[in-house]
Image 1 (cartoon, rainbow, N blue to C red):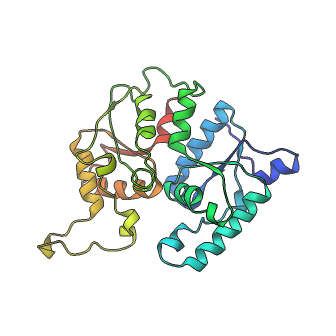
Image 2 (spheres, rainbow, N blue to C red):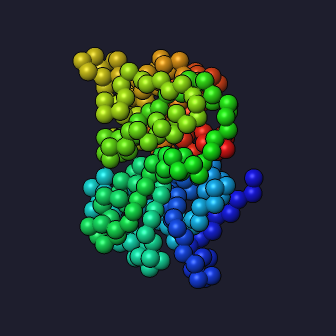
Image 3 (cartoon, helix red, strand yellow):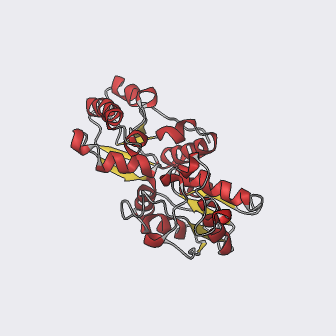
Length: 266
């Protein structure tokens, strides 16, 4: 399917403004695996006729990693730069597939003068399904198949979004099976705690029994018997994919974003 990805600057040059700004994020722009999620979401927007645009080269990091690492100065510099661009284009509504970008844009930018309606793509997709704008193929490739969903911390515990991703999965007519720990009690994949970039701490009480947290989470997902692990965060995708590989199950179980699941069934 051919699809278009206009920039806000291109629309502005034509005297137009987008209804929705798609904030792509660093992972969606540069991570080879997560670029597929970006493509899938853009295809959905094209197919149902949403008037959207991206910032393209004018989009920079939200500053979230800097603030979490304690570099408040860098965060405010990056945030103010983005807010200047967004306000300059009079952006009102933003959707993003990254829960980390979603959290900082929604909850932390207003204090710096950047107030927008910000949605995570799970809520956006749920809304489009409920409005009948997304109609999924009956009996698609996931009909009756077991799917389990891993809650992103920044989406779930951070912002209370638990049901939207599950309602999107239910629309696929799949069998949604929950892991032992889910929703508010869900186990973090480890990325939010910086485990993506370091070795695990020694186990307690036996230091010889340390285990990567993403491997433990992958074990919980595999225990459901699901053929598909659905995620809604680029960092959860990396951590769970690596966890599944550590259990030598990568040829049997897929780790897939919600947008990819919807795109495959449109």
